[in-house]
Length: 488
Image (cartoon, rainbow, N blue to C red):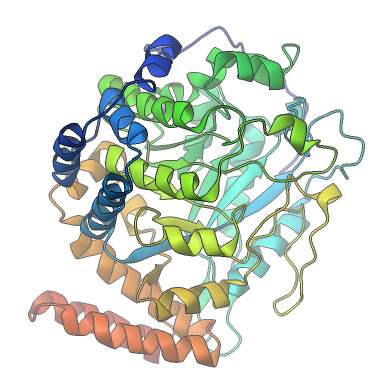
């Protein structure tokens, strides 16, 4: 894997659906409308049927201000979370590969004009060491993060992905072999040709956040002489990715830049745009809030701060609006907020997270945050084992499953599996087997005891028959041998 300075892609060739679908006058008008309880109840009934909501219907939920109606939204979100995802929570951890950047975004510690930032790109040896340390924690999936720079072209991203997949960790006691089973990407928008290159490396989700869908705000915080200053190139990125063969795309907005309700409508509009043109919506949606970063005057950037209550309400509304889309709440958020969101909307979290280049230390080492080496300050510093134990004690199943991705149950195919609810017949068993892997190889005694108790409870819920026998057989083989990765 080597870095070579490459020509940048032509930003004029958009997708076949390359239009600006962010209708600001419509969105702003919708957010001024008064709504009645009858409207909201009709929309909630539609959500309970697992149908995606329109922008107009989402606006009705956003405009609800009576406590009773807001609680109905939360109750529906809890039911949808249970119906679509069960009580599983999927884990991942990011790996920051390099923080060179050509952009100058006002909210980001990596921006090019920030002289406080320590610039680094991991060498191959350093990358291998970082992945091995993540594997030693128990992680099975990662999000590789890159700044936008000539050095981080699609060939470099693809080489990095292949290198990550090659790394193995042998557990000293069980003798089991661990490796990363899914590598997602958070990087700059690419051309069609670039997406094909990274897809061929075996990537999972390609994630590009619009940051803000509000045009004037976008122009204000993204200088026009930078790559990121091109609103349409970024907005069109997920569509180009799908056209190039990428199965899963991830959307997101950085909350705090513009009105949070406007951003929610825009995310729903983006999901509907992809569904209309490609018959598949986003695999995930993220909604990070602005956090302190080196060289950033946060009070000047975060002009639309989102209160905790509104943030949780937003997650619930998104769960109703896009019922089959994974919702990610990252370690940017404080532990209490993340814990609150687990039961009614969120399906994926990171834990034991380091966003410093080369920041993962040896297991058991205390990690100290240093803003001049990070993109932003994280809010939840709980180690992976502590986070897993918390979930177990609250009857959530921590999952490291990647079976669907490797068996082709992605994109439009995933939707076909998920809509009838059949996905739980595979996802819950696979969550249980990956939980047993963690308990056998990585868990502390306290976490292992809590995990074994939850396993007993979940197994007791399974209907008797050959499928249950197969699940029990896999769990037993994992617990008693070095066999791993036994998925349905």
